[in-house]
Amino acid sequence: MSAIFRPYVRIVEQPFNKAMRFRYECEGRSGSAILGANSTLEHKTYPSIEIIGYAGDAVVIISCVSKDPPYCPHPHKLVGTDCQHGVCKKVFSTEQMPLAFQNLSVRHVKKKNIESVLTEREALRIDPFRTGFNHRLETSAIDLYSLRLCFQVFIDDKKGGFTNPLTPIVSEPIYEKKAMSELKICHVCACPASVDGGTEHILLCEKIIKHDISIRLYEKKNDQIIWEDYAAFDFTDVHKQTAIAFTPPPYRIKNITEPVEVFIQLKRPSDGLLSEPVTFRYSPSISDDEQVKRKIDSSSRQILRMQELQSQRHNRSFQPGYVEQHNNPSNGTHLATGYGFNTNQNLQMPYSYNILN
Image (cartoon, rainbow, N blue to C red; front, side, top):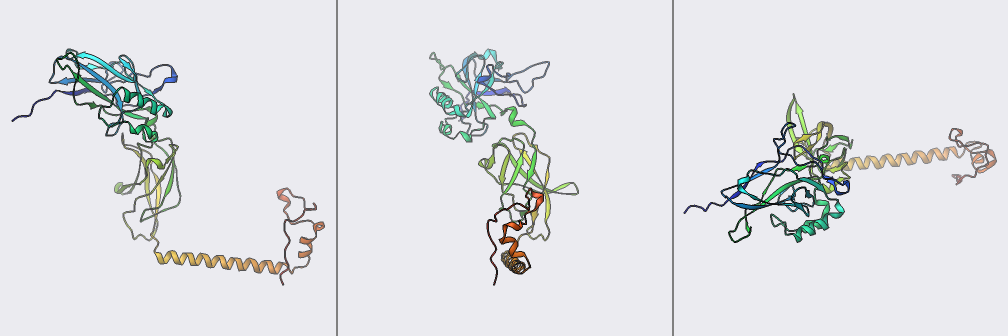
């Protein structure tokens, strides 16, 4: 028995793949309209859809959803013709297909308003993929610089309403201009990483979007990449969009005897953009015996240094005039005049030296 054919929605033209400006409500005007992928200066096009396998009237509801699955309702609003409460609703006939949306723009919702906006969206029952609205309580996990358009189409149920839903479909991602800025590494912690990985390092950079960034490490030989891997970090490890605490991956060779230089760079997964690379060093692994030996050597050096200082102090205490100078304020102090002190001032010392017997 053959499967029953069901009408479906197809996106005829995707949104333009260049970043656009999401304007705030306080700016008093809507932003630029969302253009189509084939738009040019001479001929503007717009996102468009059509229904395959159906003829008649229909209703489309367009709303913003998250860039990544499971496509949760996104707090940003759509404004323009046929838009209310942040969503667009339009009744149309399939004779008008492909149906283009010429006056849609995105309004940026501030973080402090996310919960109230999503609560309003829940009251409207705009939840295309039935993911729920619990994410409104975790505002830090919502990417405010990228989203997708979701098209929900309802066809005529032949009973005077549009209650027959088709499978919702999402567009390609739309990015805010701030998210698509150039990537640049300003500074990387100078301490080398262990070939075994597992050590935390700090990278300073120009503003990034914490949900859309990765750290790539690689090695080249004769202009060929011979090794590549990615650092481990969570979006909570990104501080103020300008610093990342990350853990480098293990180096490809564990038994190196000298430090090795590789390259490190930022990568934006959404569009593959890479920053200019900078050098990054891996150091040989230190065995447990070597670590113990280094600690013993360090302790021994500290003990010898303390003995040396005690010996010098003991010898100075028997020099002619040494004790008298430090116990008689009228003889002045040994503070350097170059630091603004007058050696003839009658200064009281904060402590006195004890004569060693």
